[in-house]
Amino acid sequence: MEYKHQAEYNDLSVTCPPTDYTASNMEPVYRWVFGKIEDERNFIPQFLKNPKRFLTEDDLTKCKALGLSLFNDLEGSIERFNELKKYIGDKVYGTLGDRVAIGKLVDIEGVNGEIERLGHFTHHSAVAADYTHNFILSEKEL
Amino acid sequence: MKNIKGTKLDTLEGTTEKLGDLLYHEGPLLSLFVNSDDSNSYYLYKWTDCDETVNRWLVVQLSSNELKKFFDKKKSLRAIFQTNPKLYLVDIDNQVAVKRVQSCPATALPEAYLPRKDSMFVEETFTEFADEFRLFLTDTGKKKVVKLV
View (cartoon, rainbow over the protein chains, first blue to last red):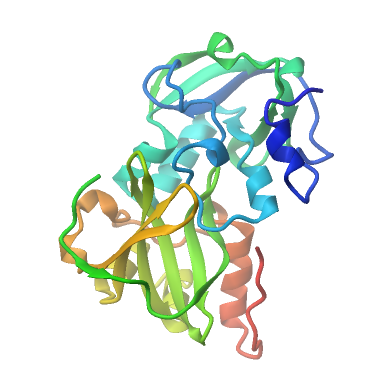
């Protein structure tokens, strides 16, 4: 698979994406986004945002932050957002987003890690990924 | 990003070393650092705000006893930030360079910069590192913090 961020992976001392990540079709999936689907911040990994939300730069952290966080459970995604808001405060919308988008992942769009608590998983993008066409805003606000 | 009235500093006290992330989503949200010269002096970095050039972190310097109170659910994260006099705002840019440090009292902070009142520790919300560190704090025979990042 040809990855969107291969140049960044090449600079890391760890294998990225991790070898146990797999490609699959998943629907529905959910992602926290900002305002409109077209917002340029919505599908950029944290490591490539400017300014990126980082305190140190080790390669394992960089690899993780070159992926996108998604959920396979709508209620789980909202629960997780509210958990984080409790500790970070109301400014959290400024870094995590303010709406939930619903969409699908096609196997050619990248590889996914295992499903974790509340349906969270990490997705590494392939060149073929086209999220703005495959996601729409859900009616749920965060 | 809000202009906060604090006292500008050149740097935080002492050299700090990151131990791990306590809350994480596509990058750190709440991280724990230790003072390299004083293993009983810790720093919590909580993401707080951002603009086009920096992320702002609310930083509190605290002892292992205070951290233990949080992990033992005797003190909320909000109370940790509100009651500790060693409170700082640290602006960090895209190159992970510190651009500005200021000390400020909790009373100078906007409400949105603080955790909510119900911000007591809940195990499943936090990272694996948080759980390991919580266990470390209860293990009085353990002498050295293992760096987990």
